[in-house]
Image (cartoon, rainbow over all chains, first blue to last red; front, side, top):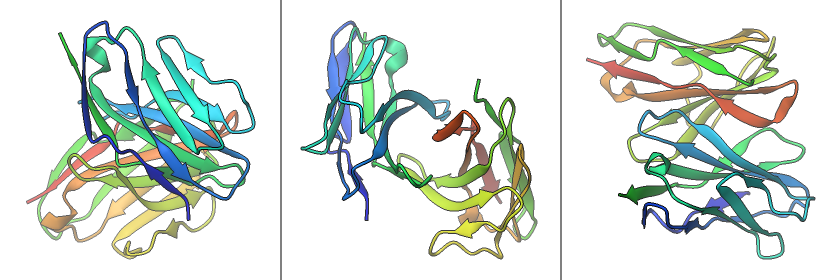
Length: 114
Length: 116
């Protein structure tokens, strides 16, 4: 069974600083997708970044980047120049290449402090 | 692109009544839609997966007769909570994949259900 682990229930960061959220997963598959979703207080789930396992290059979206370590089954999210609007729950998710079901982590609540 | 809407955003109903929640993909054809339930400060719990034109696949422990799911078209899925009770009060979120977004789930804004 696939499992996704987020070991940091809560984190905080000063505005303009950098923070890294951790995520590990367990799978026997070789080809899959990994995602980070953000859920702000509005509760709308927003896709932050997506990584395909067969791509070695780490995905980047503006201030958001990932450190994808396939051998270690690790997929951390780095937020640079943190902004107040980054305050939200962040969920890591895994999907097999041949399937369409997501496996979510338990989430990390991030607070950006002004 | 890849916008998913839900209606209503908030509904309050009396115990014993049924409530229908709609999930629509606005700019793509959603071959698969998912329904989740989320309790406060918790992760999303998958309730069921539905493919257009076929019966939904329910997760273990989810009562299919209580949570009726219909995916009648490539842009619409509905979740009906039948004979709702206070313990059904929760936040329900749908998501969709399909077309150019086949390998990514795009989420609706969610529906807050309160059963009195």
